[in-house]
Image (cartoon, rainbow, N blue to C red):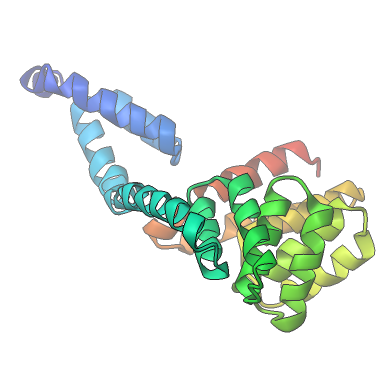
Length: 245
């Protein structure tokens, strides 16, 4: 291995540095760090081929930020002359995709004020409110969504409404809605939100069961889905450490 490291020098060090940086950012399984450190450049190369190369497809998504922001700028100018519901809806969606939740919420407010009546506009405004910590304001929009389409957004709407109920102290309504949503939903987000509700009531065994369900999905998932679900896997592990058996 020393001969190989010598042959790779100084590129081997660079390869290891790149692999370690990717490991820190993506936080895959811990055994990879030992492969990178103990197998040197060869281990780093194996890691990058297995873990980093598939991320190139995800990285391409980041390039969409430039046309998105260009379109945001265009809409911000267009709205001065044409403050239509459609323009505000599109602007709200773009702000939301860009992570600007407060601006997205304001755009959806204006879209609805301009007589936008599409279900997605109310749903997304409710999501923005909930993610911004305003669960009480989120409830009417999410209730409207679930009342019209109970399985909206692959049952995420029902799960988020249940979470909003839980955050506002409406525990019975939250549990009833979580129970209905989880008959068909397999969203890790919903599993963990339900687990948090159960833990807050001291029902630790049930809570841990739902958090464990998130981790149980990991071995059978294809690689691209595992990478997308990693934040939920980390949250589930942290939950199980935090909530005693």
